[in-house]
Amino acid sequence: MLNKLNLKYLIKAHTQLGLFAIFFFFISAFFGTITLFLPQIHTWENTSRYFTYEKEYNYKLDELVKRTIKEEDFNPNFIEIKLPSYRDNVIAINDPSSRTKYINPYTLKMLDTTSDNSFLSNFFNDLHIGRNIPKIGQLLMGIASILIIFLTVSGVILYLNKHKQNNSNFNFKWHKNISLILLPYIIVFALTGSVLGFMLSSASPFAYAATKTETSNMRSLVGPIIFPKDEIPKKSVVFEKFQSIDGLINKAKESIPNLEVKTIKLLQWNDKNARIKIEGYLSNNRIITGRVNRVYVILNPISGEIIKKKDLSNSHIGNKSLSAFYFFHFIADETLFVRLIYLVLSLAFLLSLALGFLIWSERKASKYQDNRDYFNFTGRFAITIMFGVIPATALILVLYWALPSELFQRMIWIKGIFYSFWAFTLLLSVYYEDILDILKALAFFTSVFLFSTIIAHIMVAKTSIATLVKAGTMHTALSFDLVLLILSVLFFLFYKYSHKIKFLAKHSRRYYA
Amino acid sequence: MLKNMKNYIYEPKSNIGWVHGFIACTGALVCAYLTMMLFSTLMYGDYAYQIIPSIILTPLLMTGYGIWLLFSEKIIDVLKKIFFSSILLIILIYLSIKVF
Image 1 (tube, one colour):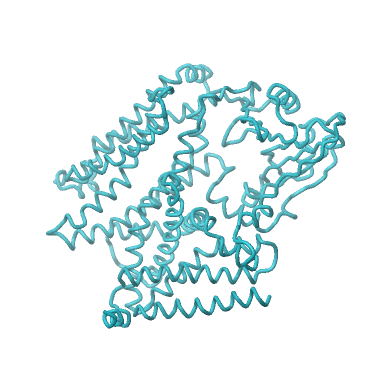
Image 2 (cartoon, rainbow over the protein chains, first blue to last red):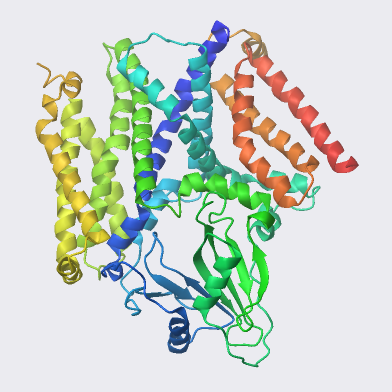
């Protein structure tokens, strides 16, 4: 048990550091929650992906590769083929010098990707990792993540020391309960966040110590071990008949049972010394065969002989541990079910952060009853960060479809309007006296923006959407619009009837009867 | 002024202030880095073995050091803890680089 003074120190540190970290981490967690659905957003924002899905793929890679190399004049030294996946349901082929070509896996037609830009998925991801703030953004998110680790550990120490065990305050009780339930989830995200945001860019001292003061460049030391480059065989200018790629994939699957092929690399193709590298993850061990630790087989495409194989028995423990470490953050190969579970956990975590802020805010409110302005601005600022971000995000979606594609610096306009509107919500939250009025106004804006997004989307992509509707399948683009419509209705209902909810009305002076 | 500063550093605090907190945070960062640098020099294996655990464990260690430094009644106690542990770690790092 801690003595009283240490307990007091810990509470103060928990409060003050929490107040600093909460705003950064809330933004990161909010956009992180959105990026759980990056595959869906990516499909929705790129009209080239608006094709009907069939039950099974029906492609022969040999024909496809031959045709693409010939038509696109690919460099056969190194060609990478990414097979359709949950993240992107297309076949992607590229060589190091060309733009990636995307192919419909059902019809084998080349997709017209000239108007694709994946702006939304990239922008949401940038906001999640803090890359939108040049130079220091990612570092700040990393520091906020380290502080969240501190807050979690200090919170657990306070809980174990039975601090305010019988406190029945709603905010306190649920901040404590939710955070304790989500403890592993928070630790995983805070730890991965701190490594990605802070540690990777500040690991020079370890490299300096490990090399006995020779170099401080961590990437040049660890990179070749964790991510070895593919060796390209020498050219012999003699050609022999190759076995079929699909047959070679089957051989790779026999060699590594449960292999789910993600990528195929053709090295010095159409040559006697050619090699084919077939890599992917193990369906029965996805955690340690994630993106950092793909298993693979390198085959001779002429004889079909296995030249090199990497499975779990010979993969580096650094790859295995990093793969497991990243898996729980990125859930790269996971489908909708796992993402929905993460969504629930993320929303609970966001709620816990908000409740944590409310504990501080309420205490200040009672302390400074006669001079509310002292703490009031922080409260208004918190509303802007926590709730103002919702209509601002909805506004990006409208702008993405509504702004004309030929507009000069279109992306800069979208980003500029997004930040301006977010700042405007601060004005709004200062303008309205009553908290519920602010929330209602923000909900109204969100509802209008989400509905406008659907209208704008249909108007811009009407031909592609009509084709999907005619095909009668529930394509991701249509499901996404449906989700937006449901959210729009929910926000409108909140705007219209939230004052009738007793819990919310309690926090409102105007509506409290 | 020096006397005031000395009093400030030596007086027991009933509540932590910004100076106390800032020193504890900086000290936690320094001590955690030094500890994991020592780990990197002592760890056998390739550079992935030597560096990756340090990258992952440092944030956790920062928290541990942070709490340890926070539990100090006077600012001089925080400074002493940082000073002595840093000196010890620096000597150990130096020895491990030169000897091992």
